[in-house]
Amino acid sequence: MFWQGIVEFIQSEAEDHSLLPHTIMQLFILGISLVLFVVYAALILYYAISWTSIPAFKPVMGKGDKQLTLTIIIPARNEEQKIGACLNSVCSQQYPAHLYEVLVVDDHSTDNTANIVKKYAGKNVQLISLKDELSGGTLNAYKKKAIEVAVARANGELIIATDADCIVNENWLNTIAAFHHKHNAAFIAMPVTYDSSSTFIEIFQSLDFMTLQGITGASVHKKIHSMCNGANLAYTKKAFEDVNGFKDIDNIASGDDMLLMHKIYNQQPEKVFFLKSKEVIVQTAPMKTIKDFFNQRIRWASKADKFEDKRIFAVLLMVYLFNVLLLVLPVVSLFKNYSFDFVKGNGNRFHLSLFQFWLLLLTGKTIIELIFLYPVARFFKKSTLLWLFPVAQPFHIVYTVIAGWLGKFGSYEWKERKVK
Image 1 (cartoon, helix red, strand yellow):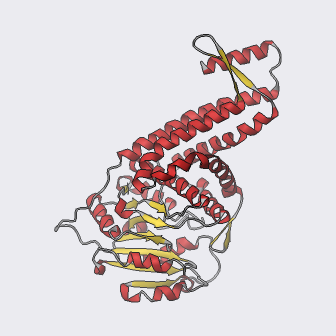
Image 2: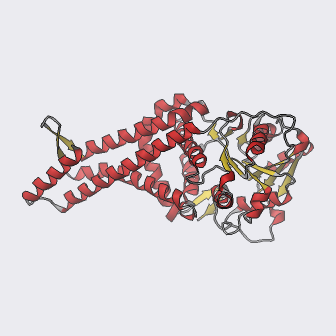
Image 3: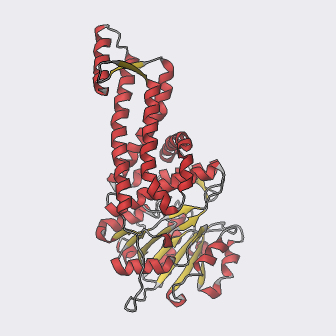
C-alpha cells in the first residue's frame, strides 16, 4: 500500500505537470531511505540473532590442561592516573604467576607513568622505554611500534593485549588460557565495557560502545567481518610472526587491533574467535569531554577505508549513508510543506509529510536497535541504560556523520599528538 501510494502520487503530479525538480529529489531521497532502512534493519536483526547464538564460555581447567605461557602487553603514554589500578588488577590474577609476564611499553610519557610501573618490578612487570628502541625520527603509528617491540621480547606463547586505563577480572587469564586450549585459537576478540558515571556524555558512550561490542561478537562468531578492540584481545606469538606483524599497515595511525586481526583471519579464518564470557570483560574509562570523545571516534573512523576486508567496508558505508539521510530528511522537509497521499486497505486515504516519514524511520531504527541491544545489555549488566537510548539516538546520528567525515578528510589529536 505504501509503494502504491507513492506511484499514485507520481502519476497525479505528472498529469498536473507539476513534478518539480525538488519534488523528484525528495522522492529519490525517500526511496533511497526506504531501501537503506530495510537493509539496515535486516543487518541489525541478523546481528541480534548472531549475538544470542554465541555460546557462553565457562572454563573447566582439568589436570591434563596444557600449562600455557602468557605475555600481557600494555602500551602506555601519560597514564599516571590509571596505570596503577590497571597493574593491580593484572597482577592479581588467579593464573599461576610463573606462567605469565607483563610488559609495559612507555610511549614517551612526560608524566610519572614510568616511575609507577617500576614499582611493580617485583611482580614480574617489565618496563620498556619506546624511545630507547627508536633510532630517531617520528612515526605515525606509535602504538603499533610499541606492541611490535613488546612482542619481539615476549616469552609467552600467547600474547594478550590491553590498555593502560583498563581493569581486568581476576579470572581473565584463566578463562583466556582455557578457551585457547579448547579451540586452539590463533586470535581471540573479547568484550570491553565502559565504567561510566551518570553524566550524559559517559552514558552516551556506554550505549554506543555497547552497540559496537554486540556487533563485534556477532560478526566474529559468524565470520562475516573482522572486528575487535585493542583493549582486550589475544593472539599467538606465532600468528603475529606468520603475518609479519604490522608490516604494510604500520603507517596507519590506528588499526593495531582490527587490521592485525584481518591479516591473521586471512591466513587462519577457522582459528579466529570471539570469547563470550563475563570473566573476561575488561572495563575501560570513557572520554570525559566531547572533544576527547570526537577525537577518539575520528581516530576509529580514520581506518575505515584501510580495511582489506571489503565486507566490513560495505557495512560501514551503508550505515554511514543511512545516517546521512536521516540527517538530511528533516532539513529537506523545511523547504516545502510536502506530503504523500497513501491509500489504506479500505480505500481511505491519509497524508504523510516528509518530516513525519523521517520520524517513522527514526522510530523504526530505534526499535530495531533496541531489539538487538537488549540481550547485549543484559550480558554487560547495563539494561537500565536502555531507557535513555531513544534520547541518545539523534545525537548518535549527528556524531556518526561528523566523525565519519572527519575520519576520512580531517585530522585528530590523540595522546597529545596531531595525527592525519
